Each structure stands twice: as C-alpha cells, then as structure tokens.
Length: 98
Image 1: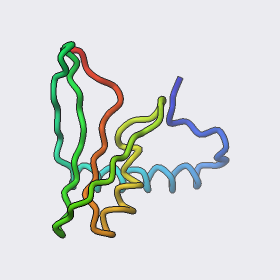
Image 2: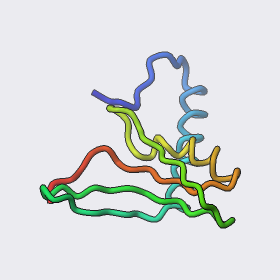
Image 3: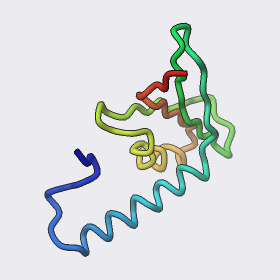
Image 4: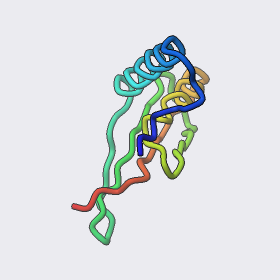
C-alpha cells in the first residue's frame, strides 16, 4: 500500500504541483530540524525532530502525525507555527528497535 498515492487527484498537473510543494516543505523541514533520540527502558529508539525558533521562545508546539503518517507530514504545521515564534517538536511515532 502506498500511503502517498491520492486517488482524488486527476491529471498530471495537480500531482506535479502537490509533489513540488511537498518537496519544498520537506526541504524546509530538513533545513530547520535537529534530530533528537532517546532509548526507552525496553530498548526502543525513540526519534523526534526539534525546530528551535530564531526568536527566543518559551513555548513549544508538539506535533504528532497520524497512525499511517510520518514525521515529515508535520512540516506543513511547523511552517505555520514557526513564523509565529514557536519552537516545534515532532516525535516520530514509529520507534526503532535497537
């Protein structure tokens, strides 16, 4: 199952625009995030991505993706909160066994 296939789009133009937009969002996310990880007591490596705002902030927005989502799906929301002065934390819901 490909989670990225959207059956409600028709034609190549819409798919191209969405693809280019997603690529820009993902690149922004990659450029602004610092990866964090810890290992839980039961041996799972828990990953998250932190975006520290250039403006000092005492507020962090915790962004969680859905069951079939992935951490980069949160790039859209990060780009909404970041300009408003918030730091952002996006944990990845798929722990890696170490």
